[in-house]
Image (tube, rainbow, N blue to C red; front, top):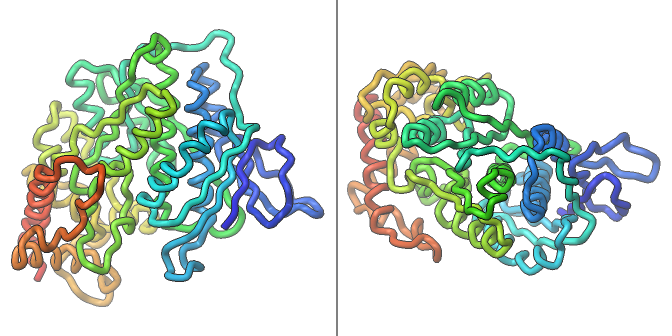
Amino acid sequence: MRLFCAPEDYAFAEDGALNVVLYGQPGAVKQGRSARASAGQSAKTEFLRARLEAAPRAWDFLSLALSVVTADLAGQRSASADGWTREFDLTVAVADPTFWNGQAAAIEAALKFLSTDRWRLKFIGGGIQPAPPRNPARPDENCVVLLSGGMDSLIGAIDLAKKGLKPIAVSNVVRGDGDNQAAFAAAIGGGLRHLALNHNASPPGDKEPSQRARSLIFLAFGVLTATALGAYHAGGEVPFYICENGFIAINPPLTGARLGSLSTRTAHPEFLSRIQSVLAAAGLRVKMLNPYEHMTKGEMLKACGDQALLKSLSAQSVSCGRYRVFNYKHCGRCIPCQVRRAAFLAWGEKDTTFYKFDPLGKNDAEHSNFDDVRSVAMAVMEARNEGLEAWLGSALAYPRMGDTAPLRELIRRGLDELAALHRVHGVK
């Protein structure tokens, strides 16, 4: 699939590629012109309305991320040869094409790891560079934290504020999460400054539901915001916290039939390391950090620095991988729901979350399509019978994983939490 991504004033060719209008609207279909996609107008408007001034290459990075998330939505996995792997050929308009073409291979490799698709990138001139505000804001926050509406990012923001840091919270707003994100930001540390952005990627036709490459837009929003802070404009490096428990960050394939990319890899250490290298090459002084890369979700709950606040907000957080499918309710049986339920059990606090399919051990017609419970049970059994190393296989065999010993122990403890949950529910 070919996509050509540029601002709305670009002279798009009609050569069979999907033309993507960045930071604008696609416009009506006219004679001789195919339908267009669009992305980013709302995010740009919101960012500039806040009188923020970001680094030029941070805008280029956002243009890339908007292009990638649009491709991810437009490309139907069911139409690929193996029903999953797609091929994308992206041309993206940026302000500094020479630099970004020099990074194309590195970015392609990172995207392949993220989504298991094949990506080819080409950068051209003509990308957007907003004029600096007349009286730019220079926020005095000293770090950035992603605030998704999920439990892990909630804990991360609580802990940062409790430690005396002053984070600005950045969210990618999607339907069903916006209220939680705003409520969490208002409740933490006396109220966090909150920048709620939306990529609004809108391709013509049906949208691919898997959306594995959307992780890049989360990082792009955080990087853009980090380069707008007063500390960055003063020449400093800005910490950018992507808070996720280590078990889900790595997402080890539970069975041989599951690809790692069947689950998102937003905070996977291999992916973050690859993107960090690109940011460093770009001279963007933003340091991505996951303080919980060696902790399970249950351990995060138990160690949170403000237990009272966490208890009041935890059930309101969202973990479910099928949350929108079930009318904005937790299904109770997907992998993230099981990890969540296991974490509450390890924490020792009552889980008041409503789960549409509460019984885990039930195996009837109503629950027959939920193979995730079976996958977890099989993983626990294989790790117990064959040993953790045999079950893990090559899940940690990536060149940028660093010392894998603590990661192995983390995964062992994560499986132990899931095993305890299955015992309580009588899963066999």
